[in-house]
Amino acid sequence: MVIERDLYLNQLISHRHNGMVKVITGIRRCGKSYLLSRLFKKYLKDEGVDDEHIIEMAFDDFGHREYRNPEVFYNYVKRCINDGRMYYLLLDEVQLLDSFVDVLNGFLYMKNVDVYVTGSNARFLSKDIVTEFRGRGDQIHVFPLNFSEFMTAYQGGKEDGWAAYLRYGGLPPVVLQPMDEDREKLLHSLMDETYLIDVLNRNRIKNDTEFGELFQIMASNIGGLTNPQKLSNTFKSVKGVSISPTTLKTYIDYLSEAFLIEAANRYDVKGKKYISTPLKYYFTDLGLRNVLLNFRQYEETHLMENAIYNELRLRGWNVDVGMVVVNSRNEQGTSERKQLEIDFVCNKGSKRCYIQSALSLPDREKMQQEINSLHRIDDSFQKIVVVGGNVKPWMDENGILFLSVYDFMLNPESVS
Image 1: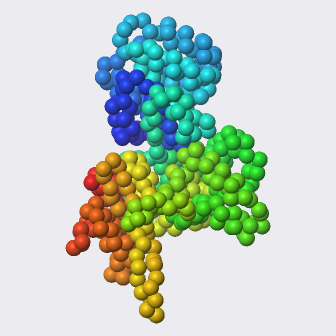
Image 2 (image 1 turned 30 degrees about the horizontal axis):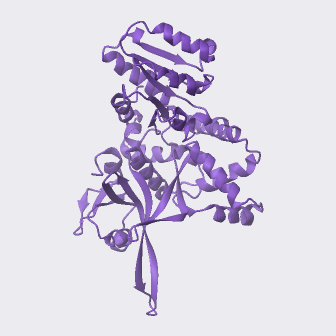
């Protein structure tokens, strides 16, 4: 089955011939190689580029092992270039090429070579890989399938599809498994034999048990505010283990560098300033989050919030967790300050929007609770409440738009 990844394909197309190394990054098994070797190559051929002007190399192919030598590979490419027309260099698992940064920078001096690369080990997955290309790296970051892409491969309705998406996530090889037990088995295998091993080996972590337990704690706390000190206290009280906040912060950074989790900063909307701690952390793929907990904690409220966060990031928004400080009086007449939360403050260039995630709005009291913080924002940017289940879009008298999670997730223009 072909799953189209038009969002990323269009990015590759628009970045052609820009004189930079196009570096396709993302969590392992999210479809980077498929994007480059299948979808982008097909586009080039449909545009009339012949096979002689597409130079491919999969460095993880045992038959290509001799080309992992930088001298051998560099000379091979030079021999393939026989005229002044543009050549497209599509390299998969490029981290297996020795001295690959120097080799790729060398290709940039060839005016008729356009370079595209993917990689899948922990070093290549790290967020700072593009800087190694000395300012000439152009990153295209690939996420697992979003819900819209997921539904193109799911045999069923959107309600059942949404439940499956929240449970098993959007890693393409998992999505394409025929049975639920196959999906769970593959997720267990990927977590134990791919993701954890990569991070542990790359960072030479010796306390792998504590590292794994930290990962589980963060999985059980998606959408919750946390910081290294709070986590250190949890280890001390629950596990009876002393781990310093500094060590825990380092571990969290390792998980972030491998794109397994992502931090959302807190932002004071009225004060227009960031609050350094605590932060919220979201998982790049919900299937990996769930398998960490052996599918025991299925809180749809938090999973939906995580899915909305990922969708916003995939659409190119910078996403913070918002808060509004209000002064009020309690029942005793004493003045008190309250912090009202806004799930997501989203920025993209000059655009901004505010989004609340609400699994259900059973009554007016719950609705007021969800929109109270939005009412306290005194600007004209778009304000949206995303509601679980099937609800028709509507707007209240204050201009707050209510959308079903299906309308939000399936329509890329749902946030204007």
